[in-house]
Each structure stands twice: as C-alpha cells, then as structure tokens.
Length: 631
View 1 (cartoon, helix red, strand yellow):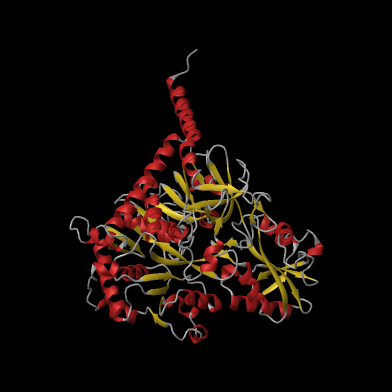
View 2 (tube, helix red, strand yellow; view 1 turned 90 degrees about the horizontal axis):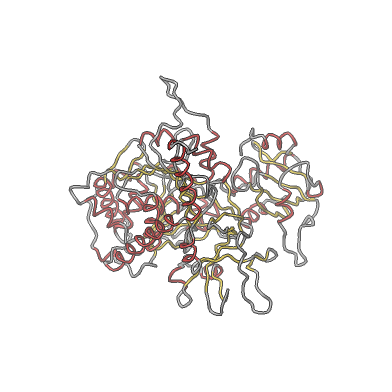
C-alpha cells in the first residue's frame, strides 16, 4: 500500500538531508567557495596596496549611498560608518599630536567600548599598530606584556586604571601612560580630523603585522602573537562567508576585543561585509539577551563557557505579559569556539537558534577548521568536511601520534619521521608551512625567535618538510568530522583564558610558606575548561592564618582566571610526582581531580572560598556534582 505524500515527502527530505550531511558534497563546494573568495580578496588587496582594513571603513563612510549605514551599536548608541570614520580621523590626528608615527606599536588596555574601536582604527589610519592587552592583567604579567610589545605609549581605559598602579609604572620608566578620561575625550573631540596620506598606510606584504594579540603558550608568560593583514582578511572573510553576512546583518559580541575571536572573526568580518557590529562592554547573563534584542542582532559570538552560563541563567520574562523571552530575538546562528557537545543541542533548543558555526583556530596559527551545523550529524565537532575538502586538507593538515612522556610528536627510531595518527585516533594537529619560507606564513611571536621556532616542526614525513605545531590533540573520523581531544602540555583553559602553569607556580612560590608548587588543571562537573589546582609543599602545617595569607597573596599576584581554586597539601617535596630526571609529573594528579574521597596519599584538598583556602569536603564535592556550586 503506497504511503501518503504527506508522510513520504518529509521522510525523503530528511533522508536526503542526512545523506548530504554524510557525504558533505554541497558543504565542500560551499567551503571551497568561501576559501576562494577569501584568498582572492586577500591577493587583490595586496596587489592594490589596500591591505589596511581602514580602507574598508573609508570606502563605505565616504559613499553617500552607504555612509549612514550602522557600523557600531554600543550601550544605546548607534554609530554609522560616517560617524565612526569622522571619529577615527580625529583620533588619528590626536595620536600624531601625541608623537605616534607610522610603524609605532601602541598598547591598548581597554574593556570593550566605542572608544576602543576609535583608538584602534585611529592607529591604523596613520599606519601605526595596536597591541591589545588583556585588561585583567596586572603586576608582573602586565609589565611583561608591555615590555614584549616594545611600546613607548599605553592608552588605558579608566575602568581598568587600577591595574596600572605605581608598581607597574616604576618598572616601565620608558613607557608613557595616558588614561582615556572624559577630559582626554573632550580634547580629542576638538581636534580637527585630518586624513593621513596613503603612503603612511602602505604595507610591504600580506605577512606584515596588523595587530599584536597576546596568547599564553605552553609555558611561561603571555607571548605577543603577530596577527598579519593576510590573516585578518582571510579569517574575517571566512566568518563573513560562512554566516552569509550582508549589509543588513548584525553580529553581537560581548567577548573581549583583546581576543582574536572578537577582533578577527567578529569586528574584522563586520568591516569586510559592510555590516553592523553590536558590542557589549563585557559578558553578563543579565544583559546579554537584552542587548541582543535591543540591537536586533542576527548572529552572536561565543566561547564555550558563554553558552553554558546563558543556559544556567533563569529564563527572562516580559514584565507586562509574563511571556518567556528566551526565543524572542532575531538570532539565526551562534558563531564561536569551545562549545561543548553536552550543551550544543540544549542551547539551540532552549533559545531557538537555528545553527551553530564552531571553528578551531589559534591566534598565531596558520589554518582553521569550521563546522556550520544545523542538525545533529556533526554536533560537537570543531570542523567537518566531505571527501573533496578532506582530500584538499590532507596536503595542508596532518595528525601525528604524541609521545606523552615528552609531549612531542612520536618519531620512528630508525627513520626519525613522525607517525600519522590512524583515522579516528587522537593525534596532534599540524599545519603545513612552506619549506623554503615558513615564516612568511607563520609570523610567530614578536621579538621572540625562540618561542617562534618552538612552534615549527621539521622533517616530519620527509626531509626538509616544515609544519606548525598547534599543541592540540584532535580526532578526525572517517566521515570528515574533527573533534577536540586534549591540549598537549601543561597549559589549560579556564573562564575562556589560557592559564600558564609555570606562571602560576612562580607566583605561588613567591610566598614564603610555599616551598614547591606543581600546577595543573582539573575537570569539574558542569564546568567548561579546567579549574586550576596546585599540589603544594608548605614550610609548616596548613594553619588557617597561613592559608588565608596564601589566598591574599594569590589575589595580589594573579588575575582572577589564573588563581588556583584548589590546593593539594603535599607532605614532602615532589609528593612522589617526579620523574627520574627530577621533573614534575602532572598526569596522576590531573586524573585524580579533586574528589576528596579519592586517593588520600595525594594530599588533603583545600579550595578558595571567600577570603581563604579552606578544607574541601565531600559535601562541597557533591554540590559541584549536582550543579549547586558554580566556580
């Protein structure tokens, strides 16, 4: 008996959709189209000496048919391309008056704001380069970042002025600090905007520096990653094309502009598409959806924790009608990185968001993967491709087995070559670099040749070949889906930030009672990333006064995201977690986590609660397991 058309048509459509997802043929063609457009745009802008994205602003702002188009929405203000352009010229001239010249690097220590955009584009307008500082940094970390940039000027948001205390200034006598006060804003407002000549913005090549963005490597302090014009154009174009952004689209982001996600994939993509950027000062579950609705945003930028926090927040309701507002918005797609598989569909369903576009990239990296997903087939993947794109990627991307004793790719003892990871098995992701000129594509870290070289791997599969090490282990299955597995080495992510274990250990050991600190990250139920934990050996018993003093010390030395939330008190130096060469081991401690009912020989656990580190109890652990405690 033939089935009714009302039943067969949806069934056939669903089957075809699933087959298309499996084969990814059309998706591959779509990706290839995106890549082709991005590459063509990049080379054209190089050929015409228009790599500086200032020209994108200028072209729209000076065209009478487009000048009134909204570029920026921020805290109730709606600024057109013309409005922003006029401000940028004023800021550019003000910066010149302050002694900034073409090629100079100027540090910006700002929360998100319209002023941040004005200073940033003002620097570009005169051929100078911004260095984006993490506004949470203070003390030694901030001093290091400013020195690394070789800057002579740092412009500071009044909201974070307290981080630039006298202790910082005393060690940076050669750097001038300007607080962007209302008085300074008034001075800039009276400055006549003057367009600098094109020669000031001329760039030598695609690999020329556009911005410095700081990133934590596998060890040590943050490093200043060089973001080139080529990367800005290609990555921004990929974001624009994947989301099909046009002049009517609005992307909302409350992610910090000092991160490459917001800088490249959101704001640069906005300029490239001639669309609108809605900006939040900083992320808050209380203001997020209100700002999304007020701006009319059609897409949102996230990091994994963002969406989990939004899910954890109670629904908002219309104060007059009582209607649930969860789905009362115009957002069609959420774009970002780090979304965990367990909340992927839950977020879509609760908030009525049609699609997720998850990407994988690194600020200093040379390649990226994307997964534009509107069904369950690739939920949780950081990238997906069909056989066509897989074939193309196989020449540029490889996964290699890891030697976990050394945290290096495993090599054949006879040939010295690396082993390719089997399909579906974890391996470190590598990106191919041109053997003759690897640093043309990979610009590395500013004034840090050693750190740059450490990211380059040679003689991987054949003599002379050159590859970029991501430091990330992923799985690439037979259907072209790529899943994140783990991070090589010690660095872990917490609250959307990379945390260097070496930096935290150094800070802890400055306290007179801490004789040794072995720092690592631990997984917690209902939390993304890894929370900081330190196995410490103290000079005396963990008395309440001592633990409170250590907590005070930690708050003074480290930004909030880097402070260890847990301490394990070791009875002896090393605590049995050292190698034969006296190197600290972290694997056993990491696997043990912070369950207080676990192996007692690893030490008693304390956690940062209120003003002190206090004993972590079974009840505390059950509260975390049950989702009652949020850290």
